[in-house]
Length: 499
Image 1 (cartoon, rainbow, N blue to C red):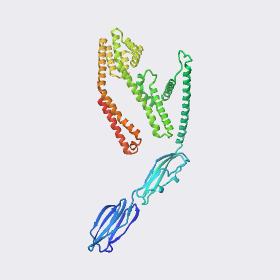
Image 2 (cartoon, rainbow, N blue to C red; image 1 turned 90 degrees about the vertical axis):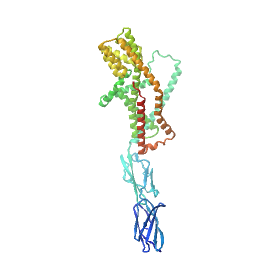
Image 3 (cartoon, rainbow, N blue to C red; image 1 turned 135 degrees about the vertical axis):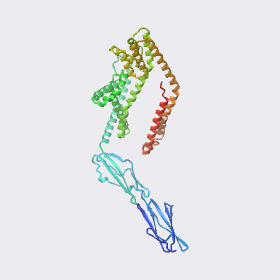
Image 4 (cartoon, one colour; image 1 turned 180 degrees about the horizontal axis):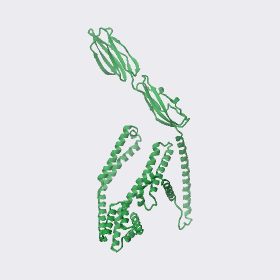
């Protein structure tokens, strides 16, 4: 066998189209076989049991070679083709940042931070083209810069980059320079103030202090400044319905923190001032880092500062109620002793306000003042129960209401209340001692994941970065947060004991 047949394509350059190889055997061939090699590995074997022509279609990316073995006249012959190159994968364009902010008339190198790789041709960054000539970077606004590149096989890839031509970042840089200058001046002022304080201490032993010192410290002046600003903001926002509605939820804090001359609207103004202070701190931090604030760095401090005081207020109110709940037994003991000595309810309330201190004394002082204004005892104690919202106060109010309507021995009633509250506090202390170790374990397990994350992040700052740079990472973070919050809720429900 001198000739086994003909092929329409012997070999070809890289292409992104399908290749059809047609083999026409000669008249001496009775049957033949294809052996297809792809990327130096055997890919497929095809046997043709006749003398007719056949087609082989190559459609996947790779380097192919075909070995044809023809049989006839008790002999065979092998024919090996050249290389068929198929490349259907487009190049990959990588950019450092797909959103860039520049100032008008600023020089911009469109090739900076760009890298193009291809599965066949390797690095072909030099072949990339862009529409930079059609983009006007001298006017304000957002411009779309499109990069285009093709490989030898004809596969084309594109990538869009947004260019924001703005002067805001320039102004932010100016503001940050001003902030740095003001901070430097303030630092110099503190150094001078420290020097004055040292001189004052040195000469204080040679001077006589006045009988009544009218001077105020720096912290007192700062507190007065914050209070005055709060009043001014409250006067400004009083005309807005949204702030007046929001202030209603803080009325219970006004009743609880009676030693502070705040209205419900002042709590809202303090939240606004706190959010503004957080924003200033964020600007100062980014200024020292010489970075321009992103939209998240502007919004997150405002939201965090606005809602942080809610946590502080709720915690103070919780401690306030716990303090009253703890001291209410002492108040009832004093009142019961007053009744045994023939005193009235009004006199007993006044004595409690004089004998005790703290939150419970303030509440009884309020009740004494309300009684002096002519309110009935039932109304006074009902207002007291609504202010502090604890079961013991509601129980005391109901008992006095029944006594006032039906009559009875008030000494026996208060003795019973005193005994009940004493047993209740005793039971609470026993429960705390029994569940103390379990609570420590619960708090330890709650804080352990956070401590673990902080330690790992301190050792390797890039360890958790994949969670924040990929969609699957955000999904994992969401699942972890849901599981963590669910764990805390379930454990708290289990540990909570109601009486």
